[in-house]
Image (tube, rainbow, N blue to C red; front, side, top):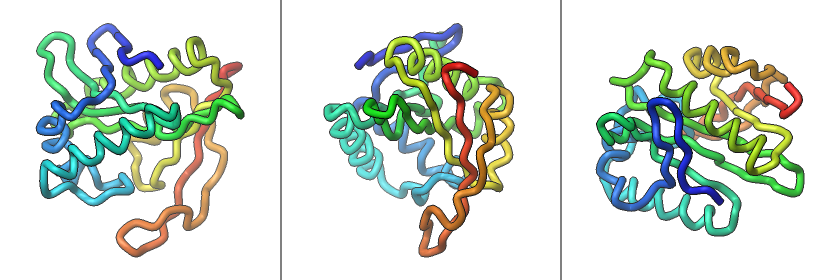
Length: 176
């Protein structure tokens, strides 16, 4: 599994425990975590635990998560990756988050484009999925911009804070 992807302005590097302080500052922001299936972190140990969990999944080729790093400053501004890799069916689910102070600058779409290119060329996947909270308009706009297809609503598909939430399913095929 490739541990680094490069774009014009970004380095996507496999997360490591040393990134926990930077990622904690992002994952502890309620604006960033509002539509994620986790509560805002309250302790840096939670970030270390999350990175370790994702690293364990990566070793089994079930997931890989990258720190999103500005090439110019080496600052970590978010994370992205394949939340679930299914090589048998040549598909993966992606996820992404960017620090609120960097929203609106095209970094998320640049990172997701890199994930798509890598998935379709190097990983030889056929389908990329994204599940999005229906209220997360910024993420929905990003997926439309990248020509994802809305497939429907997964009703009460995810439990968050004791409540069942709908998710909108989007996909992009290699042939799209």
